[in-house]
Length: 156
Ligand code: 4NP
Image (tube, rainbow, N blue to C red; front, side):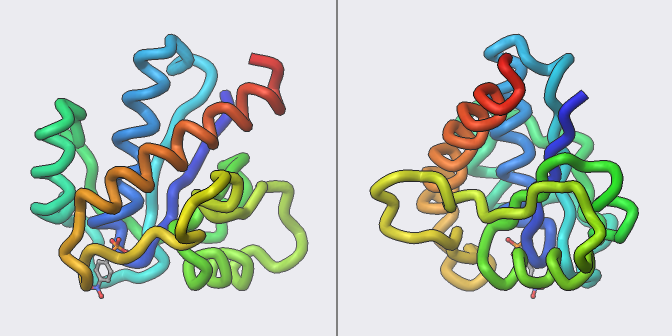
């Protein structure tokens, strides 16, 4: 199983959206038994909480389920368990790298790093901007690219 962990700050807005969108893509492309996604936050403020109302509303509009998602904090164990740690922004990526040190096998990168012609490399935080639609568009684009990359790297 190829395991992907999406990481943001609070694990209530961006990373659960990415987890839900990516798992939906896997289901629709028949890859759920080969690749699976989870999400976590670098911060601990919202542990145990469901996704933010803005994320839930957006996902409901797109007919994507986020049932059973509850915020958790990333831990060092995730570095052993996951193959890809996908940060929403540069700050999250820096925090993951600090946690990881230099003894890890996981790929650590930002969701939008490989997306061509994207106006931003960081997914803006809708907790502050309130713009969940913009986040959805960026997350969907990033997830499509990530799936393309993983399929290529693993000959799927
Ligand atoms: P997220 O958004 O990292 O996309 O889940 C945030 C949620 C909560 C906070 C910051 C960002 N907060 O400071 O509580």
